[in-house]
Length: 332
Image (cartoon, rainbow, N blue to C red; front, side, top):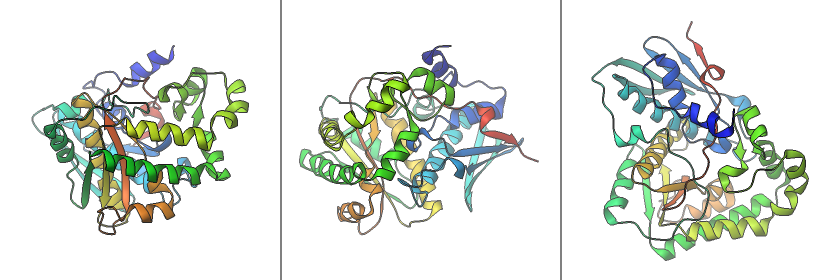
């Protein structure tokens, strides 16, 4: 099987059976940090529970599991949207560390966001730099509406470049942190064989880089993964974007982070439905010293949770996901 065939299987159109497996397959196509897929799904006839898989956490870049719980919210939003396509109403609530989703029969319905699930991707490349229309900005901002979550849309050139400055400061701090680099290395997949063996992680071609055998790429990593090169890349990518959106929650707890994830996923799906690309630039969230400075940008002291850039750009290869059987079990 080729890489493209493997990606096509996990992103095939939603089928009606086996129902729970299909819902989990579409849920797992959600955005998640480092493509670590930090979730498990427990399913019964009328309920699916999404729980964190702490064995897949990134303790350096995400020491309080913020990104992990945002990822659960992203998966929950995908599942809710996919359920509607199969004639189910999905009611999601947060209970402790878990998202409990009860399913009940309802008229089947689709939407541009649901139809975008299989093609959405985080596109880490240069965009064309062109602005988007006010109506497009309105639709993107509307997609982020979620109780307890605020949205800041930045589309003016000066504001976008200010965000780039913060990202570069935070990225510099991360690139000087050996523990950060060591953790990142564990999630890098340099060849198709490496990516397909684990079905997770950050495959080089998904970021616009060439695929190489791991035995060649790993010794060379320190030569091309440098502070200067990464800062130049992020500054150029952000400058090429039509805008940046910042999501901030009213409180810093797991339920609010999951809510941010749901808003974040809808933003990505709406961008995809509008023919746009988007990518995460979360460095300013991940470095506490820079995060506190970034929070002064019209956030009213709230913690910035997610930062995404968007614009018009090319498609890149899709990332992989583990099979539903690897992440789900039946409810006892």
